[in-house]
Length: 354
Ligand code: TXA
Ligand code: MG
Image (cartoon, rainbow, N blue to C red; front, top):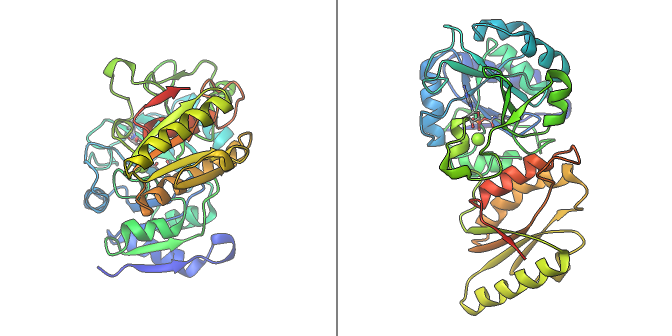
């Protein structure tokens, strides 16, 4: 299949391209498009064939449900069987934006879209191009991240092209995304509501609206082999091809430990890589050392993480070490939990204390 690639201009509201994308979606085709979090791989959420095509294009297991994207809040009751008060309050506070809610699904949404579940994930993105496209597509666009299954989510159109060229009808290029990590997922079908995936909208922000919220126990630990409640979180996601280990501890200890491991790897002819903050990057002897940003600037770290993991793949790095970023406890209230959750998954939860 020939994939049409269109660069969205200034403001990402190129009406002609978005209208064409909408037509492709209505006709059952697939279009990759930018959102404020990561690029999505869109299909008509109400068309079971479109959902099947999405799974095929991604090489994704079909028990992994898709998120239904809306362009206006009014449509929430069409895809959800019941809309609790809590959902309305969250929509008022955080939509349009990087928050996905899990609700009981309505009959309008086919099981192919929800991976066989009776619940549906719904989000209303803030990206202006995404919203226009969803409107032109008829209002309901199912979209997982636009990567091949198992690869990091794409934060720039060039990564979408790498993974999806020839597999889908169209790619809308909106440059680099703003956030770089996928939306926060909150399950409103349980009491208290549970965070199934941490993101830009933090637990603290959610509890200001909802009161008590809990984390799914699998977010930061392997938790005795329990399966995550968001089916997609169980796969070894976001993972680079080589082996990644997170090293925690005092700066000097981390640098000394990692350099020792790098030396050993090099002796064995293994290509090494390091993810480091600005202040320590120059101290590492890895073959490829990536500076992810100032350790206090979590928004920059979040935006760069997936791109760096992909660059390691491009450079065939086999053994990688990462400093620890973000604050898992979320005590600083920022993106720390989301960064740490993705980094832990990329490392298959291998963490060493130096
Ligand atoms: O930021 C985002 O959410 C991006 C952009 C494109 O909007 N989308 C995204 O979709 O990250 P995806 O498919 O890569 O991740 C969706 C996650 C998966 O882990 C899936 O298992 C979970 O949401 N999910 C979807 N429906 C669910 C449901 N009914 N119950 C529990 N988890 C669900
Ligand atoms: Mg994904």
